[in-house]
Picture 1 (tube, one colour):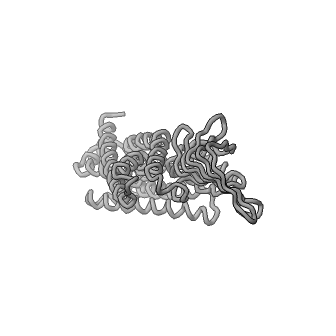
Picture 2 (picture 1 turned 120 degrees about the vertical axis):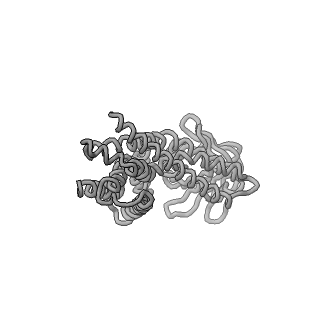
Picture 3 (picture 1 turned 60 degrees about the vertical axis):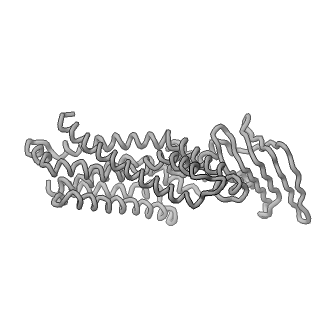
Length: 353
């Protein structure tokens, strides 16, 4: 890599990191404001700050493509404003060489974002969700608000909070017969996973028949099920925060259980294709500097880039639900907006070059 390539990459990378910091900061501030509505004697402002702080890795991973778009516009725009890019082009540097030098820092950031989303975000997000659920314990236990829902055969499972290390809180098991009538209800304050089974504590169990209901209390009860701590941990956090390698097996598990799984497949393909989304958006940004859209101020370019980023996100949000409704392949829904970016960016770059 030549001296100018390093200089260009440093400009683009610095601008992208700055934009990413601003976006994540604004999103976190908005989240703190939203959390104010949930404050209570149990869930304090400090708890809300802790919750938002541990969701920062997810937000960072989510905003990498948008930050790469605006960062490339800002970094390249500054060099274009000082005519440095014009001098380099006149010295014989080709457009593909400049494109490669611009893509390098963006792809480095994309890889770092992928690693954060793969190894940091799942752990931090699970802690954030469990911390909030435990802090709100008296409000959310056994109400069905929040928490995790699952199914094991004829038994529907609700867990209010999931901790690392195989510990769950606020367990409710609802068992139905073949005619979908409730036959058993079990509630437990806490559960611990030991030797392939759950040990429930402070249990209240109700057996229902056609003419009566019998309730008894137990200190402990063993619960044998295929539902593992790993599975509950997957369901406790947002799909975008789950590791890529765990999304596909999770989708197949949901499919076997007869539950909704296509949204999990969609999340899998979005995470796999995110580096290609970053590269496509950077190509679009380069068309504002080297293509037919280069005539214009830096502010106008940034404003247009923001609009493009918003349209890209809206298109992702559109194609995702559309694929679920019309039964389209998840990979097609995830790849369609990215493909449009690559085609539009490549066409604009080569139009006047």
